[in-house]
Amino acid sequence: MSGAIRERVRVFISAKSSDYEYAAQVYRRLGDAGVAAFFSRESLPAVGSSDYRREIDRALDEADHMIVVTSSVDHVLASWVEAEWGFFINEKRSGRKRGNLVTVVVGALGPTDLPPSLRYFEVIPFDPEALDRILRYVQEPSPVRTVPAAAPHPTGPRAAFSETATFGGPPGAHLMKALPARHVLATGGLDGAVRLYDVNTRVRRSVLRSSQYWTARHEALITALDISPDGQRLASGHLDGSVHLWELGEPKEVEVAMKHDLAVSGLLFSTDGQTLTAASKDGVIKFWDVTALQEARARHGAQRLPAPVVSLASVPARGWLVAGLINTATRRYVIQIQKADGTHRVVATLGVPESFTILALSDDGRVLAAGGRDGTVRIYDFDAVAQALAQRKNPKSLPPLLDLQGHKKPVSSVAFFPDGRRLATCATDNTVTVWDLTTGQPSSRLQGPESESFVSAAVLGDGTLAAALADGRVRLWEER
Image (cartoon, rainbow, N blue to C red):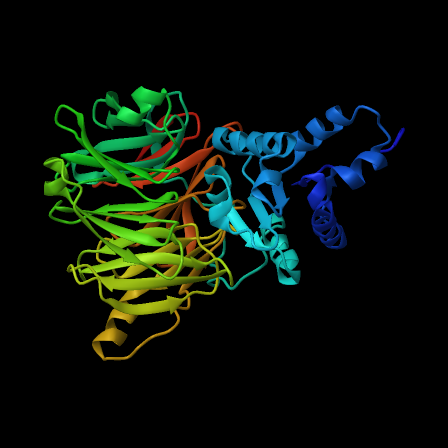
């Protein structure tokens, strides 16, 4: 390839030689769609370099997305293959890469057979339709219906917030949870530890490390957090399926083993703080008796759902628990509503048109926000669902009221303001966007340097906006 300009790699395809037949089909489909991909069997001879390791490293460094193709657990754990997807995951966790990681499984291999670090991301079966679905993850989002926009301000959305503080630091953070009334923020670290901050003083109150951390000197990535309404307890869910509960007064861990088979995707304390609900990608929701846990008794009820749980939310005003599910065979996403009164009776199962990564509900339970893998935030009218159920109607689908477009990466966090008319979102880039839900337009865009990446956002009771950075820092803004 002497003297030629190399096209920048957008997708890196990782596969063991035994799976090259399937990987080649993925490579050709991407090429037909005009997506520049690197696949060692095809790409290395084309570059004309004898230093194959250097070319592979260059492609890994350049690629926005990675596709792993495998027909066997042994193949995906082969040294070179594991090194490639392991590198990509570490880059994502650090914020240096923001693209998608998709594993294409061949034959009888299923998501539960994969290592936890891979099955946490997207997994799709190998078939002709899968080749087309792959394109959705590696191309720019397709145009979708949006609310007609008013004439834009010449300089874009006005920043109605002023930055007031930045605090915290390494190691990096993956998500954040706020207790709005008490001005407490908790960040889930890449090291598996939880860090608590007092927003008023900007001081770190404590670092919560489980007994598992002190035994093994590490803990699995935190994938879910919640704080009890009275601020006395905190629960963390992890990539390996473990759940830990802490008393925050001293603080100390409640020494009871709580476990799911796959990654924990949602945690919720009940309004009275007596029940901890944990959902997982194993398709099970568990309801833990907090009083029993404090007495070292792991007493819980369990409900097996028909599909993995992606996200969990609640509507205290209506007594609802809301679970976002994905059918791994059809790749269809649904929202299931069930009673939160102990019966767990399903009152509605609603199909939605697009994928989502995270769900959030306004405090009054009237509006649902779903952050999408395509960077779009979709707003749904839950008030209409409640009215239909009150009239003994049985809604089957939930069309969006608004499509909020502005992010180019999968949405990682959505948070309502107390008034329920505004929403803060971020998508692992250097921008936090505040949306006006009455117009469907952004009212503020809060930007950091290009090197920064916001991974999670939260809104406190007084309207203070907080965002966690991938490097572990927390930034605050107040309305002017």
